[in-house]
Length: 424
Image (spheres, one colour):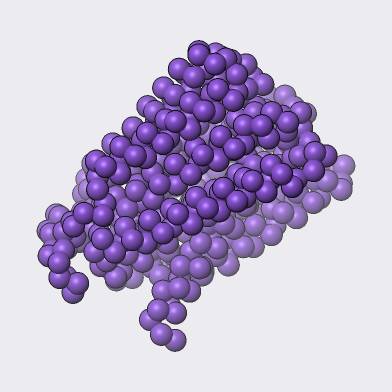
């Protein structure tokens, strides 16, 4: 098999793994909605959101540094994975206890808390597999998890004995199976010796990447809360519904980082070459979002829309074109963010994330006060996203010649190579 074919196979496997993992974690929410009362589902959704937020932060602190080691040997990647796994095994039980305490009056919270450490540990091992050029291993086990979760959704539709507790217990068992399978394939075990030195090395990069991922999670919550307070819960439901309709395309956006960073690191690609790839991805993603959004708005029958979003369907459908514009601009900003992370420019990536957060919250607040409706807020968010994308492109100029660091490992000093020499 040619080197190009191997690269493509890894890229496809990495993207598939991310899609499987996202579906597995998304479908369980729909299944819980089927078997729960609105009040119970609302409480469980908050606990699930907290788990996802922790997972997002850990991806920044532990996952991105793993991807930046993709050009190193298996031994060094495994050692990094061992320390990352140790960190999760410390954090996981804390998250579990927090979920159980906060959900003391909610059926199923104990099972969600019990599942949390397995879900977090499994996510770390996914990044080990991808960094070690074995994304197909992660894709296999995430595929099994995905199929199992879809089966739970079907059972929730058809069987009355399915409850939130049963669903979360079964989902946790699926996470444990996937974790066990991955750990057996990767041979990664926790390591304590040298953990203090490991944490100290590259600590600021970890903090920045963690803050970057954390702000991404906080922004959505803050915007929706602001709109609910300043406009109405109905407007919040409309915005959430419009973004949910575009979620299938969002899955591919989430897969970009786990493909581009490790592959570019292994090839020691120059910044100009990486940006050419990222700009093509941004254009393709923008076109896909525009086409998909147009099809959803014009083709999906009303009765199907009501099944998906309930009474929020009509208003969500009205603001969908504006949300598409926001997502197109976000594609550009996300592509730039991945470009910055690819070269371990953690400070610049965090600056971009802060700008995106401030613009989104500010745009939502101002438009909510001025327009007092969901469409007006959607317009404000779209304008804010376009401004950030345009200013960030002009500021960072990713198409301009840049020297590449000899190593993008967060523990290594940034020794620059010659940007004009392809062999550098």
